[in-house]
Image (cartoon, rainbow, N blue to C red; front, side, top):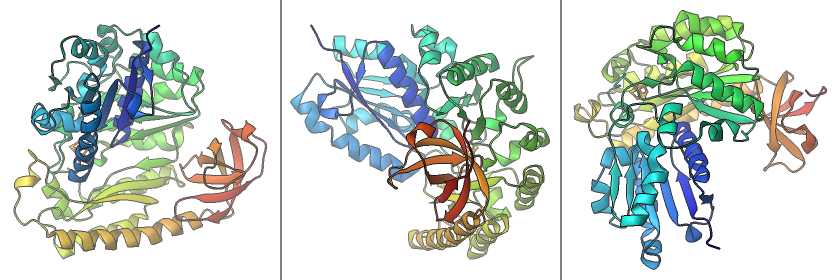
Amino acid sequence: MTRARRAHLVTFGCQMNEYDSGRLRDLLCAHGWQLTEIREEADFIFFNTCSIRAKAAQRALRRLEELRPLKKNNPSLIIGLGGCLAEQEGRALFDQAPWLDLVAGPQHLPRLPDILDEILTDRSQIALIGPGETPAWSQANLEAQGAKPDTFNSTAGPLLDYVTIMQGCNNYCAYCVVPYLRGPELSRPAGEIVSEIKGRVAAGSRDITLLGQNVNAYGRGRLDGEPDFPGLLRLIADTGLDRLRFITSHPRDFSPELVNLFGDLSSLSESLHLPVQSGSDAVLKAMGRGYTRRVYLDLIEALRVRCPNLTLTTDLIVGFPGETEADFDESLSLIETVGFDAMFSFKYSDRSNTVASSLPDKVLEEEKSRRLIELQTRQKVITLAKNLAHLGTVLEVLVERVSSRYPGQLTGRARNYKLVHFDGPPELIGQLVSVRVIEAFSTSLRGERVEASR
Ligand code: SF4
């Protein structure tokens, strides 16, 4: 009996890539592949990459280099690189890494099972890049690749799951490669999304995060009868799930109707990731973000009126070309004013094709590093203060797993997405439990169970 072909997948980068890899795993299994964690026993190794920041791209290329001896020892091994780095570099990757068999942009991943058969037959190098005509994981696209839609709805979903609702972005922020690599905005039909979520809820998912580069632009330019983003959230809220979140949204596309849903929709989580990128109007303008500091702060205020316990996280870039010390101070003061619960902060790096890469007045590397350290040091203090403010409060925790860090404890997330540890039996996994916070740390809370679960 011949053994099933084995695939080893490695994911770099964002939740969108995690989602793409998850669907690709489903698709490969549906085509008879087995998954393996051991790359040495794989027939196909695939890196799903990110190139948003120079560092992420360099890391993936370094890992690709490690595969060269594997290919030498096993010439029939297929090595593929997908995602944003593949889209950005295209066939040039074959010059850089001749042991590579396949390069596939994010919109072509659903074609991989067929393409792998093609490579196995004629051993040619194949590059699939450029835009697709439908969102990569739309039902239409999957069916066109010969996959059965049932496969995707019947997969036993984890407790916390992710569903892509759109791909691409039309915003062209001056520093960002996404619109060049993931293409223009393409929204999945609402009916298809709702049906996928119903399937996942039936399979056990209680907490679903909607994914897209700019989710609140969902449905822009939509067909008659298709909902906009608030309309989609209302439809999803009727599917019976307990918690609903979305990443990533853009402050410019945050409509008053969307603000009002916080507090209206009981399943909408009390947490929001809303990238601000800078606290300086001059830098926001140069970035092409389409809002001012005042507009951002007003939006936060309106959200907090609707949802006083809302936790907020953000992205912030330091050292954008032309950023002065005064501009940087504006970013420092903004994080104090808002009081973010957490922040993802980065040093600006030039990405090819972007407007910012050709801007003058680049900030010196040492200066960017200094600003990043100062920003992160301030944020650490704010984050701890936000966590300490939870002491004595009771949070509804969705129990996810046995704690890997604290023996005998369980770990879950509160409605505001704070990580909570508490003593309890594993039977509580998958249930909602009331927990009183008795200790606060920089990245999590510790509590004690106060009530029966459901
Ligand atoms: S909105 Fe986000 S994904 Fe779109 S261009 Fe701006 S930073 Fe990139």
